[in-house]
Image 1 (spheres, rainbow, N blue to C red):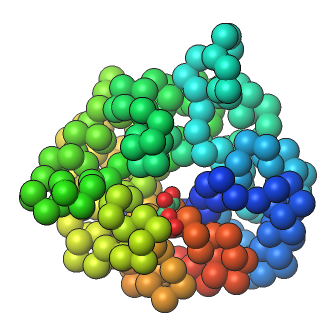
Image 2 (spheres, helix red, strand yellow; image 1 turned 60 degrees about the horizontal axis):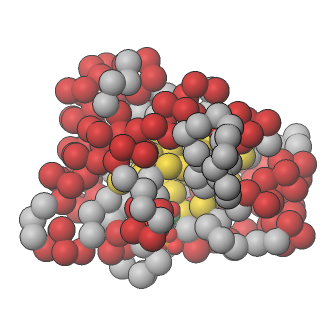
Length: 253
Ligand code: 13P
């Protein structure tokens, strides 16, 4: 099945509102020729969502959040809910990023609750999974990633699974300049696809599986040419308009 490739820029904790507007403006001019051929989103920090939403008006680029809380509202200081993200114009939200798992106590169970909360308001989750270097070296990659996927999707009906994006981000490749080789990426992406088939049948063919971890202009096209790599979740290189555009061009079939 031909899946539209999906490239999302995760800006992490970067960009003031003015800087965010400037980046979106630069992207807009460069993106016009690829509009409609690749799905593109950007995930600014919460404080810049509204500025970026305004700056994206009339463009095909979609807005994403970097995280969400699973409750709709309440006494949860510092948190932002799915209805709030919808109100801010988000079409997607990243959940379970390894930085949140490692630094902020995210677990498979909180990821699952966040997925349910997002789907409940019509926001499309990007579920991040990935093994650490120690787990890879111990030969546990497929076990760890399989467990993360299975737990995140537990209890979800197949039509909901079809709305997900899974981002495979090996922790050792994030921000290190060490990208997974095409063989390493395809092995894990293929295993995720086959697990999704077991869990949700045909819906698995519709799930986009992004690769993330030191995606750069010079490796993006090769990775996205792999059969089960349907796009990229891009960190550092998404902060520079020229680099991000080159990565998006690499996603055109
Ligand atoms: P880098 O592209 O900077 O390695 O970050 C990847 C990432 O964590 C995207 O979510």
